[in-house]
Image 1 (cartoon, rainbow, N blue to C red):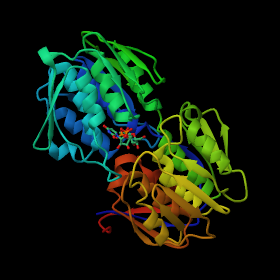
Image 2 (cartoon, helix red, strand yellow):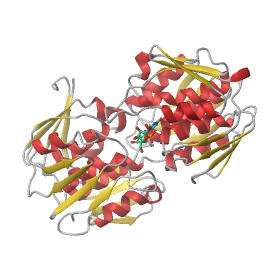
Image 3 (cartoon, rainbow, N blue to C red):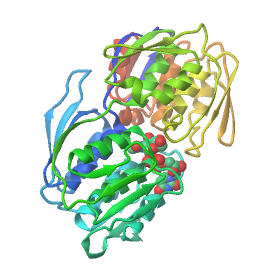
Image 4 (cartoon, rainbow, N blue to C red):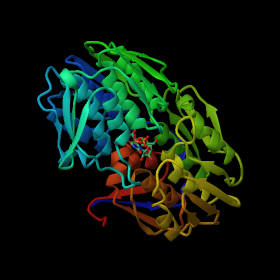
Length: 432
Ligand code: UD1
């Protein structure tokens, strides 16, 4: 296995291009199953999750073609997805287990073919992460659901889902996306109540409407969908990754540097993160090509922050903010409300000299003067980034192992950071 070696202490400075959002790209790719025409997606990041989903989709009969490889550090890929017929409605365990978001093929397959069999997902080890909300939603639309040998089998009566009222008891990004995609081809109207409002869902809804869907209420708690008989192809560019941008904003502040994060409308999609980071002393300035970030105070300020569904502070930024708070003036309190077991970075940060105490879903972080380099183990995607951030400022060398998590979600991490002055290398085969 590979590892990343970082020698801490370099100030980051320069322009850093932000990639297309993984969490927008994955549902958008699944939307290609809804039409026999060609869906062309641009600004797709080069990530393991994108490759995994591409393989899964190909197994369902999607013909993919990479139109533009996006070789340059600042450009994404353009890939066409064409599905004249669905050749298989089964999503097998050996692919689904690699990536939880594979469950997002269930809605489109069920909507187009009237049945689908999808392995129960695996993915990040950040809690139990059930899919009951997805399944209840499909039942509200008339589907029958059975669990068989680790697979979910969903069947629509008479081959087509029916519109209905889907009221989520808790907000779920994935369940909202799955039901939204399915509802586009259902007979009649569907109302999704207590829908998640993440910008990635709006990106999906806008693309679906460009494909001929009839979705109203985009960006609100209530999505109304008038089902149509068929969707058509379109060309769509994936929105920028607000979590990647937030992670690098933290990197700029921790290293006492200044980064211009490049990406259209970045400041708009990062509003909730920017609010919290500003209270920690970061300064954001709009530029022609993105947003300039630096620490506006002499020391990072301690903050109290609670993760919430959008427009609250994202759980996907929690680990990175915790890494930053290890150096804060005074103490910080971080409350995780979305996932249980999402503090797996704490023992690793502690091995680097951080002072963190966890009680249930609350972590108290007391700032220290200096973090110390150490060999550490990445446990999930965002936890891995918190260790990279800590390594950038730690005394001496940090070796981050199990970096396959980072490959799932941070495009060209080593290239991007070293271009801005970080002393960071990927060491092939040296990891454990
Ligand atoms: C998505 C994101 C992930 C992010 C998360 C929360 C993608 C590919 N992933 O994950 O990066 O951390 O949103 O912003 O977009 N839940 C249930 N039953 C369900 C579904 C969810 O109880 O059927 C619970 C989960 O266990 C969790 C909460 O709801 O506690 C939110 O999960 P959800 O929003 O569904 O997360 P994902 O869509 O899996």
